[in-house]
Image 1 (tube, rainbow, N blue to C red):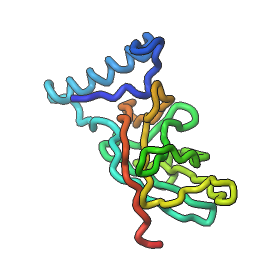
Image 2: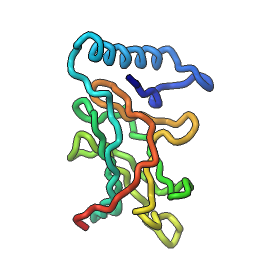
Image 3: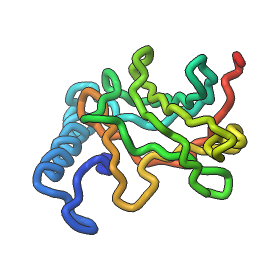
Length: 164
């Protein structure tokens, strides 16, 4: 099995602090109990399923849906860790807010700045990709109710909402 740790604290280039090591050990123990000893049903933790562009009355968003969520998605503090890139892997720095979706327990909403006159927009949503934990030592904090962390991922292609 795999237990993500991208949301845990590093004290140097490769080592986690004590609290993070304990958290990782608990995640591993939960999987061992499930896989080897018939422990309680437990999903592996949030894994990306889709990223959908949705125009709202308040501006454009990208709704990132996950599978394997235990209960609902959670975060400690303000949600962080998501980024956008174009097809050439160039960053598109237009996410101004990341939040847990109030209407869906398995979804994150990325709010997108749209000011073409300032070059702050997504030129081609269909050629845009979502990443989580893309940079070196990123600040990521997405988990679920069982404290199973989301894995780093990308590129996840953005699709347009068919209802638009």
